[in-house]
Length: 122
Image (cartoon, rainbow, N blue to C red; front, side, top):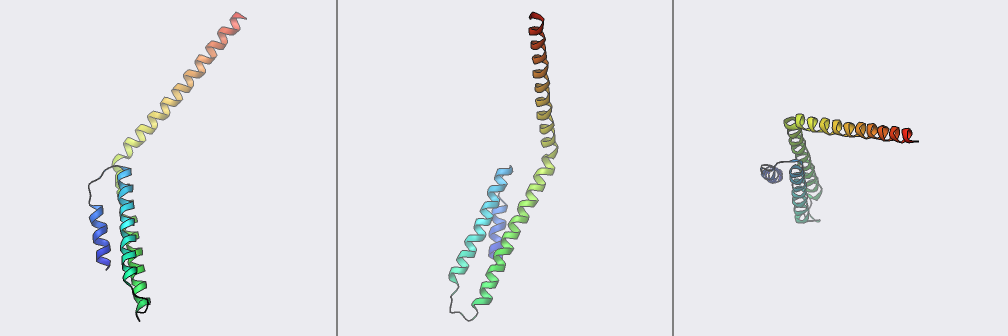
């Protein structure tokens, strides 16, 4: 049973999507697959089965393993994305910050210039 969880998880993970949103979509699909497989296995489990507790515990542990595998895959992909594009993210952030500060200083300078012009006229 565990193999089915992990096979489907890995099958979804191999899709070649890019970008943070795509990785989040894959992670959601993986978690949905885990839940669907868990629900399917639980529905097939009979309440009067003498080994109900053991089978239920096994299904629950497989479900948790599937969720942990999905989380680990998501973290690996996010780390890979960040390390491959971390410099670009930093450069864009620094550029935006410099632009905002430049605009603020320009507004302050123009405001002082206008205020000085009004003082001279008064």
